[in-house]
Image (cartoon, rainbow, N blue to C red; front, top):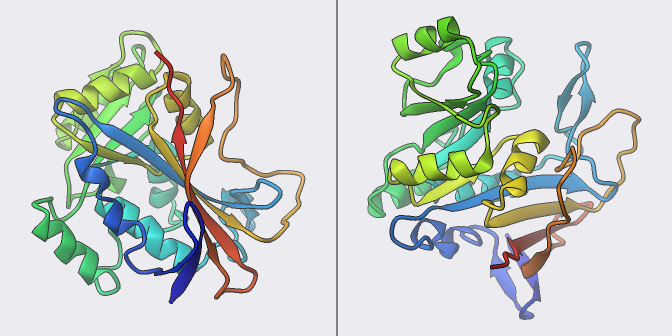
Length: 270
């Protein structure tokens, strides 16, 4: 399995290890954290569509594929903590979550777990859940890793107590709603150096609005999905456009239809 580099060079690379060699867990300076995100998207900008009788938004099977999933897991392997939303755990409690948290399926990704061990990382990345309301089913929380929750200032104290009873470390954002700057400082306070955002467009906007997201990895599948109801990788207003610069681009033409793997770094000023 290989991909063709389009930028900045022009040669073929093995798909396996393409992202793992980036060593994202070592980029952050001392007392800092490197935050990155990842999406797979169609040519018309869809990351998910209503699927099944419940009309819940999911990545369609026509868009998802094992080659992209491998790189998704490689990005997770380099993270010390996953940033996600309460919505995922509500879906998990209902039995309709897209998949388990990475690093999932140990039989398929044994090499990534061995890599983490060799790097001195825990077997599984911790989890930071962003939730303004604390509508999180405690029974859906993972027991194989540490769980932190960042919540809104006015979130229910009863819900907070239930989560604390499950061993969750909970932190209220003094600004009201969960703010990206608060999230970043929370990660730094806990000593995390690499954080992988695997949530949807609302969490993405929260981090972008605060200027705390460092990179975005984008898999662009060469297909059009259409549909009147869909999600994109970013929803909601931004105070100003966010400039991005291309770091690398690969063409995966061993799959039909083809796809591209792009790595973008957010251009920060000041």
